[in-house]
Image 1 (tube, helix red, strand yellow):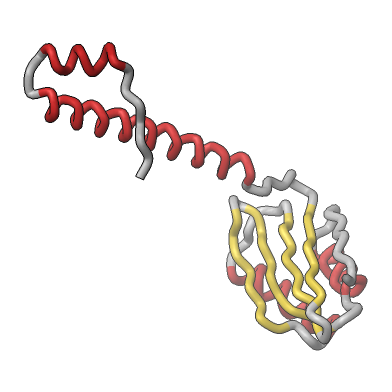
Image 2 (cartoon, one colour):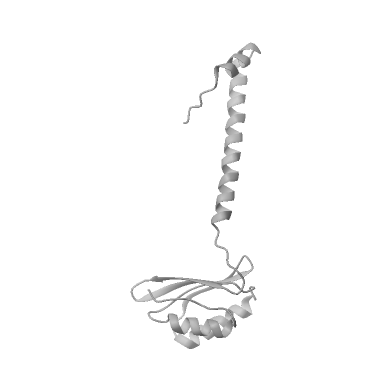
Length: 144
């Protein structure tokens, strides 16, 4: 529980108007609601500011080494083309490496987000295949 010190001038105003205890509780509840609302709005703004943005025609690639395989998270600055485009991308990567697993392809802010696992040392093949599929976009996936 957090204690809030209320200035004596406010307490004297509340006391001078009668029903001091009820008015004091009401004041504290209103003050708390205002503070909570402000903090909520600030949190929403901060969360929006931290969200990863990507320029059209660019990509980001994060790789995690899991000893026997690597996990990739790729954001592509290209409009999401739906399930058909995801299927085409999956089959191209699977054809290049024969080891795609845990495949996920989703729309993220109008762009394409890929998550998948792959064998070790497949980053160059992934980059080449994605650059072929998404002409004009450079990919920078690396093996951890």
